[in-house]
Image 1 (cartoon, rainbow, N blue to C red):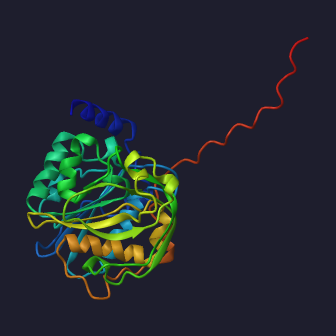
Image 2 (tube, rainbow, N blue to C red; image 1 turned 135 degrees about the vertical axis):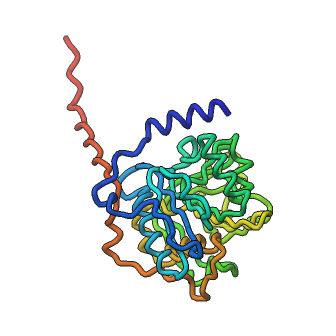
Image 3 (tube, one colour; image 1 turned 120 degrees about the vertical axis):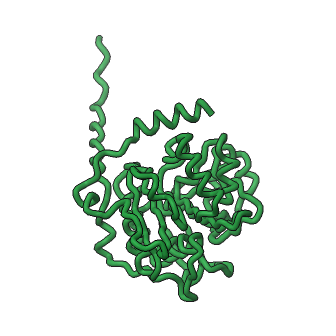
Length: 310
């Protein structure tokens, strides 16, 4: 536990978010609901991560906030930099959504934050984890599995980028209005430790060369679960989707609806038979992106090696 805490502190130091861009600063953050009857849903965006167009946590959460507003009775709240400045904003939330890096960079891994999340989970608050946030340090994996219905750990878990197609959907409220779709070259995590009662929602073929763990290699050709729902024993609800690495894939209507439905389901909101509305302006895909300096160009290959001295 001490090792994990030390790594967490180091990660928070090394990966601390730069100042928000001027555009991001104009997005309302940590605004309390004016009416307790509204379903407050808190969207926690992680710190700056990866390359432009990948891990756009702030921009993705800002989009989700817009889609959630299209459902009457919902009050979405955006939190930046991985954790609220005022933790009281979490009180009374119907659901918490985490879209952030995982592993030692999981934003609520610090003991006091973990304890706060545990309190929320123990009282039945809805829980949503997206993309890398499902990656859990081994010493926290059992508790994460009890909250989320699964935990990704490095002993058996695999990850990578490839095309996936989804055509078969079991009956579940989260899948209302979700139709067949493809997500090209997105980033995926699979082969998690699942809890009894976790319900697979999306499964698909993965390249067998991506099966890098010994356990995964024993399942060649098996469709892999990358989205699931979980009804916790205390009646809390959880949902996870390990895709959404690529920001551009929010343009896919079925992906937007899958995630929006999943959030609403965990908040115990009624989902229409046609799915939640997720109207989308194409121009919004380029809004609220993190500032990520372009990588330095690689040095040109050196000329032919100098001839050896005679």
